[in-house]
Length: 200
Image 1 (tube, rainbow, N blue to C red):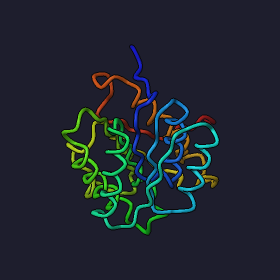
Image 2: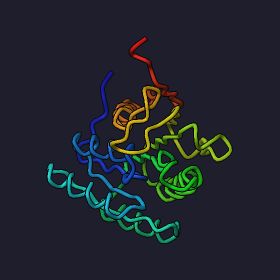
Image 3: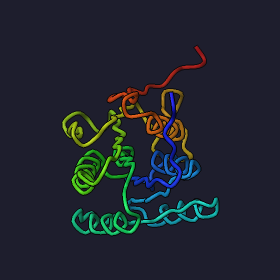
Image 4: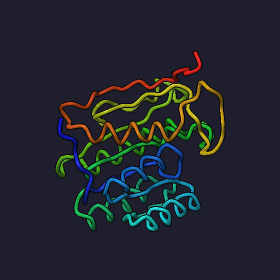
């Protein structure tokens, strides 16, 4: 199966300031994608942008403000400058512990807004990470993603240890990039990730 190349493609990461989004952004940049980094934590976003620049990548940073209309204006300007957004990774839901319980709401509302902004402008691939902690009530509608990655207990801090039954952000980021590299016809619509106890 031929893999999709990321070279000179544009990848928008919602929640690049969170461990899962950060991991996906680094992997996509390493694979040749131009990354558009969005998130609510200015310091973490800037650190990630500097890291990607130091590794020879081409990142663009957009600080989210909780005003979706204003934030989409920034995304629209970047899209028009870069010409197209080829991949959208919505990792905002992976920040359950860092967003005061609003991760599911933010993931859904920003995901839908980006979908509306990019739909009809050429083919784009949409992948959403949806932790169990976000619940089913706010789960994103099917039309706003091509692949939904659901996950059991997820590590919320980049360096924190939360036990053997916790999925690590880096592994989830790797999975996201792997799924995006699959041809659309070979990419599953739903992927369920759960911890494996290697000690058993």
